[in-house]
Length: 480
Image 1 (cartoon, rainbow, N blue to C red):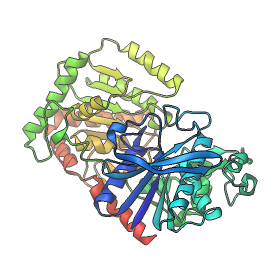
Image 2 (image 1 turned 90 degrees about the vertical axis):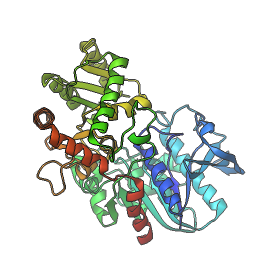
Image 3 (image 1 turned 90 degrees about the horizontal axis):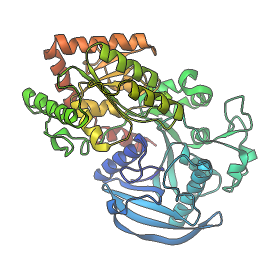
Image 4 (image 1 turned 135 degrees about the horizontal axis):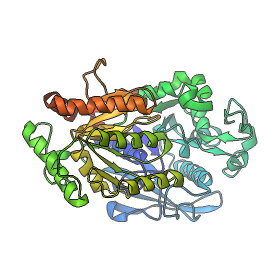
C-alpha cells in the first residue's frame, strides 16, 4: 500500500502545534508497519537541515504557474520526506503561518504538489490531505489532473480554520473560481458571505472520505454550536465522515528515558519511586523559579492562550487553585495581543508569589518537566478536536481536569463513566462548574492520597501510542 501525506507541518522540523506531531507520528508508525509512506511539505527557509538525512535533489526542475520548482528528498524521524522548493518567495518567510497571503501560498503549494505527482505518475492507494491548507487537492485531482489515485482522504484537525478565499484565488491555480461559487461546491455556508469560497468545504465535497481526530468531535461538527455554518455541509456528507483519535509519540514523551527530567520513572516502577521522581521534578522547578518549598497540590496548564482553549477559565483555575492552597503553573502564550496583554497584567499581579509561575516563552524542555512535576493538568477548552496535552499528562502520571468536549471527552473519564476513572471532567462552560471540579480533585489529593495514586498508576499504564491507534487508520485505508 502506498500512502502520500500532504500537509504544511511535520515535527520536529516544521511544527507549530499538534498537526505537525500527528503527521509525523502517524507516518512513522505506518512506515514501521511496512506501508510505503511519502510526506510532502514545503521546503521552508527555516528548516534545520541537521535533522534531515540523505538530503538530495530528487527532481531538479519543474514548473508550476510560471514558477520554477525543485523537489528535494530526505528522511526524518524514520519517514520519507519530499520538500518543495519554489522560485517564488512563498516559503521564505521564516514561519509557517501568519502571512497576509497564506491562502495564496498554500493554494500554490497544493497545485505544485499535484504537478509533482503527475510528473512521477506512480500509483497511489491513499492521497491523505491534512486540513484546509491542502484540501483543494481533492478538487484539483478530480477536476484537472488525471492521477492514478484510488482514494482521497481528508483529515480535519481543527474545523475552525477553513481557508476562506475569493473566487479569483482559484483562478490563480488554473480553476475558474466563479464556477465553484455554488452551494453544492465551494460557496461558503455563511449566508453573510455569499461570494466567499471555503477551501475546507471543497475538501469535504470532493474527498472520498472525511475524517476528524476524535469520534465526539465528528459528532460535534454536525451541530451549529461547534460546526458553525459549515455544519450544514457536515450534515450533508455525514455518511462519509468519521472520527479517529490521535496518538502521541511515546518515544519522545517517555518519563523513563526523558533527558529533561532529573530522575526517570515508569509505570512499572514502584509507587515510591514514581512519587520521588515527580518530587525531584518539582524541586528542579522550585530552584529555577523560586517557587514555594511546601508541597501543595500543583495544578497547571500547558497551552496556547487562544479563545478555543478557554483562557478565561485558565485564569479562574489559577485563582481558585490559590484559594484552595495550591500552586498554579502556566506555560504558554497568545498570538492575540489583547489576550497576551491581559496575561501580562496577570503576571504582574502575581509577581513574587511563590505559588505561581506564568511563563510565556515556550520551552520544550520545560514542558516535559512540567508534565512530570504537576499533580493536575487543567484543560478547560471551549472545543477540542482531539487534544494531546491530556494524553501527555497521563503518560507522566499527572491527572487531567478537562471539559467534556471533543477528544477530551473521548479520553478522560470521571467517576460514573462507562470507563474506569482516569481524571476529572466538567461539562458546563462556566467558572462554577470548573471550580466545583477543581475542588473535588484537590480534595481527593488531600484526603485520599491512596485513591489519587491509583489513578496516577492507571493513567501511566494507558496506551495512547500510534502503535496502538494507527491500526484504526490502516482499517480505514483498506476500506477506502
